[in-house]
Each structure stands twice: as structure tokens, then as C-alpha cells.
Image (cartoon, rainbow, N blue to C red; front, side):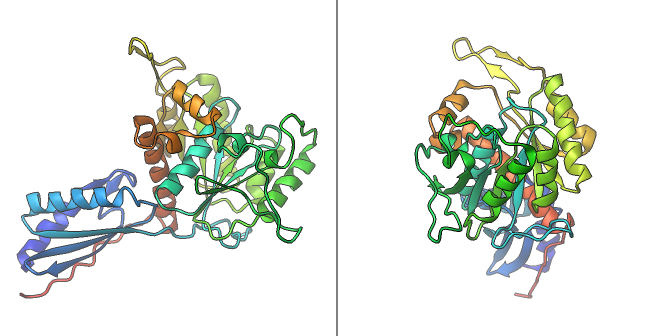
Length: 363
């Protein structure tokens, strides 16, 4: 590669949008190097989110663009690594856990737990070490949703808990410690104490992400958890319905008050396609999640459909990412997870961008 090719290579890289960061490769700060390689060029790209399945796709796309538009032979190396996110100065990160992501909603019934389960599974699917904490003491559902059935956590020392493994994800829930029909008639302080113990006394090991399925609402329990747990970022789940959006806004504002970054919004039940006739209808309204994201300056991470398969798969203990990862629904969850993790990556690097380290040698 001669020096005259450098501007063309740089310009081409700056025109390729990385879909999960939402900006071009250069602006995202993920071009690690551009170096001569024989008669061509070697480009090194370093993603900050899990991408075991996506990295080869991106490498092929960049290679094709460079050879077509910049006119150079290209070797493209795409790798990924997850960095530890920052937490509030008043809190200490949990040992071994790089990022804690809270999945929350202002109200119940919007698909928060299903979203949390598929988010955890999607991150694991792409190669990350992931844990899932069911923080909904009154209505725990992750044990069944993750297919654990009657499996119970174990303890090697009588003091700490070893979370069971489901599809490569470590799962901890109060529902794994009690009978299915046993009600948790506890007041707020007891619930908070129980959740703190589940978090602190579980042997999570080394995790890239711990996904916390928060209880619905914005009351004392949610606020206390947000203040005590070193959360790296939060995801707000809603539906397009005006009533759901009212409560979702409260959830978003709660995290802002306790200085937890909101990574974005997931709009569930965006649209429904009839399985018999194919007619598409916005049953709960249209565009509510997108409008909310624009209003508060956060990302819209996904618009997920109202689909009977999502419910059937979750009820059957095989959420969509496990049951049908290559389906349109599975791909939607995978894209959601990559966007979420990409937002965390941008936060960990200060949101700034770095230019590629271009090295040129005379040949």
C-alpha cells in the first residue's frame, strides 16, 4: 500500500456505519490500526461488546467495502473485549462483575422479564460470561422461564450460594428457593435485605454482565436497589400504549435521579402480525417508544412484536434466543443485546472517539 491510498482507506472506514454503535467505525473509536500488509492493508477493529457471531460478518463487510471503494486489497481483523463499566463514586463495583445492567419498567405486564431473559441469553450467545438475577421477590419468574424447573441452587460452605446454570447463564431467583405457590408476604425492608443477600452471597464468578430483572414500579424497593447496587446502566421496557409510557417515564426519571445511565428503551408489543392472514396492526399504538427515546435523548434499542411464539417459548422454559436464535425474532433480540452492550462500551470509553492509528511504510 502506498501513502496515496491512506486517505481513501480512512474515508472509506469513516463511511461505514457500525449498526450497534449507531455511528461510523472511526467515530465509534473502534479502529485500532490501519497498517500496510504486502500490497494491501490490514485493518484492526476492536469492538467493545460481545460479537462472536457478528465479528466475521462485520469483517467481511469492511473487507468488501475497502476493496470496492478504496481499491485496496484488505485484510480485516475484528475482535471484541468487554471492559468494566464505571459506577457511582459512592458505590464499589462487585468483585468479578464488570457490568450490572438493570432491566426495569414503570409497571408490570409489559414483557420486562422476557426481555431480561433474552437479553442475558443473547449476550451469552455472542460469547459473554453472563449472570441473571431475578429481583422480583413478589413475582419471581426467571427460574421457570430459563427452564430450571425444580432445580435448586447449591452451597459448598453453607454460607454462599452457587447459582444454577441455564443455557450458559448463571441464574439466581428467590423462586428457586421456595415452592411455586408460596406467597412472599414481606414488607419492603425484608425484600430489600433478601435481594441484597441474593446479590452478595451468590458465587457469580467472573462475569462480563449481570442482568438484573427489576421488580415493576418505582417505589421504595426499586429506589433502594438503584441506590445500593452498583448498576452500570439501565434498560427501560415499555409498550407503545400511552398508559405504559406514563409509567415508563417515571422509571427512566428514577434512574436519572440516582445517577444511573439509561442505555435505552425497548418497546415491546410494537406491532402484531396475524398468523392467519398476515395483517399487521399496532394494537397498543405506534411510535410511543421512539418518541420517548427522542424526548429524553436515549437510544431506542428495539421494537419487538407481539408474537405468540415469544410467550410460548418463555412459558416452555426455552426463551426465543435459545429456541430460535436464527429466526427473525431471535435476530431482533440479538441486535437489541448488541446495541445495549455497545452503549455500555461507549460509556466505558467516555463516549469519545479516537482516530485510527494509521502507520505507513514506504514499499
